[in-house]
Image 1 (cartoon, protein in one colour):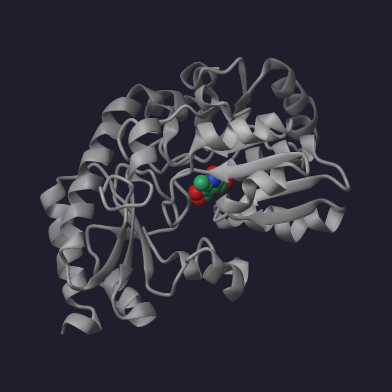
Image 2 (tube, protein in one colour):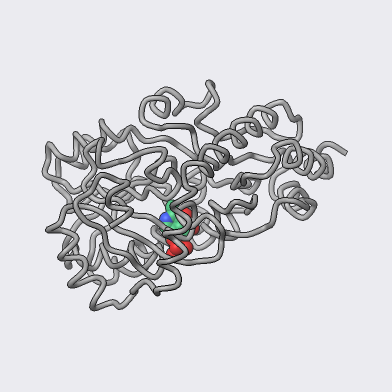
Length: 326
Ligand code: PLP
């Protein structure tokens, strides 16, 4: 209920992981023949669940781009699934516009709000129907508990609790529930600092010759900046960079980081770095990776709450070790 209050929802259901929440919702809502639109890229596990598993059970899964939405929503699919900013390319989706078009056609909008948390964006206020979280990330905040949450109307959450939760069994453990409640107490303070540090780092990395591109909605040059400024309270703690020199340079950069830990998770108070193409999004295969802009040189940084000067020094030292700048 704490997350329902923060998101402005009638009810919430807690799960043993973010993927347990994602899969319970899908199992509850869909049946053979249901059409689902995935506004990619999404977290690799989510895209994998829909494409590799649910499609085997007769769910018609279509990956769509934002420009196609008016046309494909008019065909009245069962649901539209999206993230904003997207994992790992940090593209911002206009929640108000997307949810309004979906609503016009009676399509349920599901938003994974893991990257923002309700401190930054509350998708229900923009017209979304269901919000999902991997609580493992910012809600917990300390990288020591795994959990997930779904929030929405009382009627829908009752159905999710009775079917997706009860029958699949991904119930949140009591110790984890306690850790998440404790994490929520510092959520605003942590999120403020994540956002401040991420903006400082994104700006500095823009000037670094070993970085070809910085993806961060807080930068005025970012294509999502205007929408982000309207719908986000701060621009989040995630920054992705294209390391000049591709896969080998990205590997050298990651291997030379000392303060950042190489890990696939995110949203921890400690900074983490990962190579999405070979970890979180690997199973999508080369074609989808290319379509989603998950390039060999892309590195995703989860900026923690440490001293930003220390973080920058670590990033700059590791970047100077990449082949291109030596
Ligand atoms: N949603 C997003 C945006 C994620 O990044 C992740 C995991 O990285 C998940 C869902 C899945 O969450 P969990 O790891 O708690 O199963």
